Length: 233
Image (cartoon, rainbow, N blue to C red; front, top):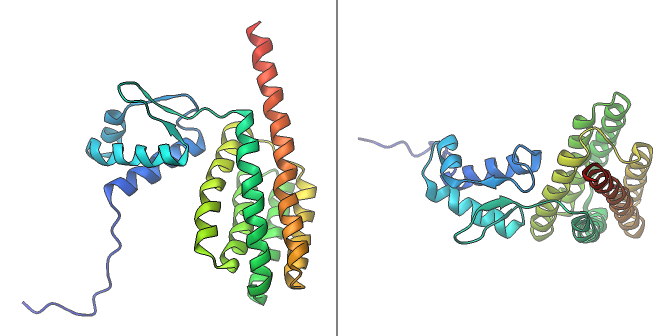
């Protein structure tokens, strides 16, 4: 029979990719808790697929640092440790600062308008104590700058690191926002620097926007560790 030539291509997602995205989301959001044992058979049953794509997805998650796999032993969700904050935030700050530098050369008037609107919504969400919404808006702000930088290598590295940062926020900081006033102010400073095409200032403030919460989050985690230790005594 005649086959139409103008049929739009259907986007297909493999079972492995579907398993990867779902398990990754469960880990980031804390549905699968740090240190929790993972059984590929149970995951396969819940996801409605065979074990093979689940195992392949777990291998990718191991490379990304979300799970720990040991042959002949249990696969577990990677624990979150205070030292991980110092391993993840500095490279993310450096990469995002580079993205801000590159974006300063390419940013459009529409990008600036979008950033201002996002920051206004971010401030409003914080004022309403809508912390989950604020987290999403903060990510949108950084994503707009990353897209303006237009560098696929930066996008790949930053996206992976941001997933780990999101995991910190979900698991440990569900109802706590780090220095909200400072975050709003830093966003505004970044926007102004980008509008002026001031690469150095955009990069400096962007780095500060990551390194300041790094120290605050590390202190928060240390307090939680001390509280847990005191409870066990």
